[in-house]
Image (cartoon, rainbow, N blue to C red; front, side, top):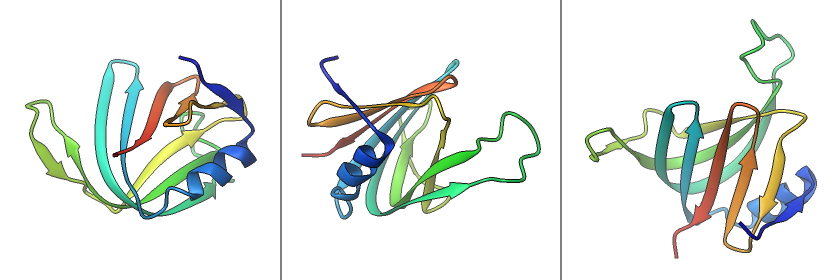
Length: 116
């Protein structure tokens, strides 16, 4: 991976430019792998000040739009909600290689890329 590191501000600025685009989100977390195809309408963030446990993130990235998720049987199913949430940590690494964003957390790895 020949990607450059970003600050969270640089990440946000670049990702905001992808509003209106179709994106693919790949998540690898523990033994779970998800692939989501989404028409990205909006990007927002949330801060959780009243967390129930340590598993609930302090911050999260919200990718808002419509899309599908690939099931275990390689079938596409509609997303259950128009929001895909990525938990963010103070230690999250933000990287970009001109085509893809890489978010690396203690819990998992996320790749966000545009469908060209």
